[in-house]
Image 1 (tube, rainbow, N blue to C red):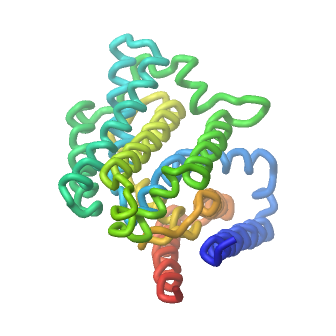
Image 2: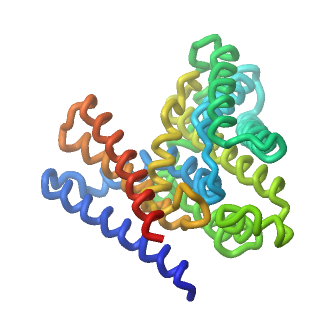
Length: 315
């Protein structure tokens, strides 16, 4: 086993220890945190951020960034809700949401790959475009017509064997993406691209195709989150997903993935997602003011970036 892999596994281990310590501290303050109902609720709460963070992991591993994920979430769910309101069958509308999310992500990837533009600039611009398009499409109002169908409701509110369906779906998607990243040629291409783009090109990796595929995946993950949120609310709101990109980036970086690219693991991202979820849930249970929660969440994002900078300087 290489030193690089050992270092990444050690990083994931330290992140897991941080998660356990955080859970112990919150439990000591309020024992209700460790009840079965609250833990299931916590897992349900993290699913929306989880899907986005999984896609963001691939993006950040290539030293990229995707600031448009929240806007893609909103636009894909709004358009699919519009289709539902017009009488489209729910399963087909759900498929359309995934296709739309993937397509919007592919636009990001194409602009970055073929336009040779910085991911930050591209996704910042498309974030504004997609969010504006959502407001135009919805006229600034939530779409609620026919949004209470059983199929759609089950996606975000259903239970299977006593476990929330979104949690089961998140675990299944995590396993699939873990295999894709760590056990396939595509995953090796992602690491190679993030580690040294010039060397990856010389080795024969089709850089543009990999970049487009990564941002397409990120868009599809955002669409899944949008479906879950729409299902919970029984509506698609134009402001859905606002700020979600920051939580996803924080979860990925907390999980040990370097913003410089080339280093990180899916398992670490899962732990990072849980840390963000435990923090938010714990602050609510403890009774911390919503205003202070925002301050604390901002500090966590700052700490996550600082940790990444320190890691980079040590290597």
